[in-house]
Image 1: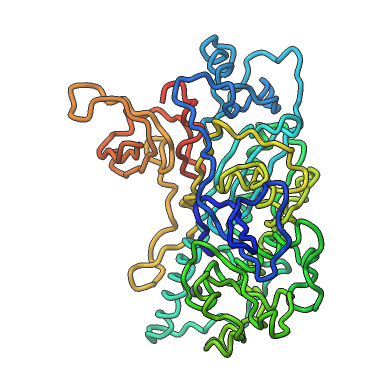
Image 2: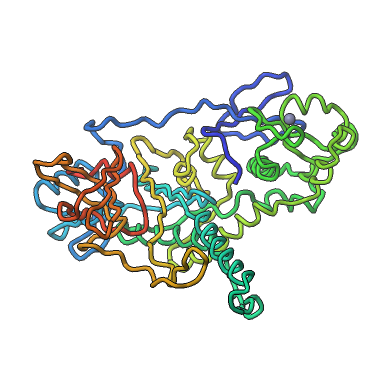
Length: 488
Ligand SMILES: [Zn+2]
């Protein structure tokens, strides 16, 4: 995916060269040599200082003594329930408490989980549809590239083995079939991570519906962008879909100088003055100087036959991302919850209209037509979720030369602990390491482990000093719910 500026807000330049901020409720459909650019000024989301009253903070998940999800509560109430021994901590990530007595009466708010699937990061948000509050937010960092790297390494080892004539191993390429709906493992990993989290959230929150961003642009709204000659002025959203499409098609770079611009302009490859049309295939991204110097020449006349040629190509990469989203769509539908889909253009429009900065989780909160008129996201700290793998896949390990000669991966459990567990270590005095630490464990066969804490890695902590807080589940966590840990 192309990088996006950190904080975005759309600014439209009018004919007189003045650049007013676009009125949030009215996206411009005028793209006639029209200009759009990104300003970096955005209202920051207010940080709630630690210990301050958390009246507008995200919620803590609550389950009944039987494990049924209940309405999430405020952190202050969760702390009170915990100190009064009326509840216990069920999970640290996402922070969930379990009541010891059944609740007397329960009110279930309409809670919708909203997803913004991305190639590297997926945004998650749970929004109360009645009040517009963001109840919880998270961002999953995928390990798609690591999956690909691991499979490339395996492929290289196998190929090297055949090339060395050590023993004959027939190449295995024509005895394989791919089932219908097959996805490359790196893409499948992304889809599965998102589904895993939807299911995990469902276990602790009474979710009523799912929304997710299905495609970055709506081909229906822009009327088959590359094939038909119909111009694209069809209502307020259409212009936004076209912008999103162009940004992706040209990879957030000026088509002429390949620079990332501060302000983008829509360039007509064959100028309007020379009979060029407004159809999307005639549009390119350009920076201001390039657009000015091109003047009324065509791209080919301007010394860019490549741009002229590329104008005819469509978006293969974006299509690949879109296909992953479709795979996710099919699987999300199997959850049985009502599923709503939205486009990237609508997400951006919703987010700009509600004055929210650009992050993965605010994008998620703004997905779809059902987005409440106002979104309250103050005090929300997203849980940073990083996929780490479960140390369980490889069934036969090769040596340095690619020969299978080692035992399958062991479970690597030492003293009841394994890598990925989040533990509290209390090292007694006298010891240079005496003290209390909370962090992620890297187990060693000797029993002397490494502990990764927010302050740094502490080496040589024996497991006998450790108490488990959260068993390793294939993810690393940061920020977010850690603020609620009573003792962390
Ligand atoms: Zn340029």
